[in-house]
Image 1: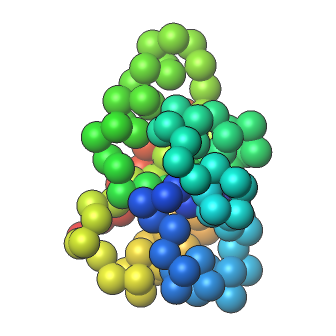
Image 2: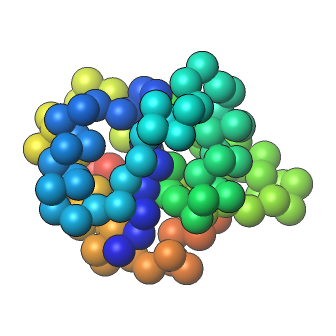
Length: 116
């Protein structure tokens, strides 16, 4: 199963608890001591740890994804969702489905979006 890194926007305690209860390897920006860091720092950290980043910050992380690919850099993958659109249960179910059906190779250098 793909390990996750939840940035400051997405690190809801209930979501983290629910994912961990289902055996997901997940850490948050708080766990990693990354609070207050830039989006690029979060993506770099997730990449060095081999973790797919999950965030509500769609615009900034999509731009970072594009910049990384343009510059020949790579990342472990990004999952994006619209804030306020998904309940904790919806997020959990969709994240579980994504990480259960995609391999690390399939999500590497790609962006996935939670769907409504």
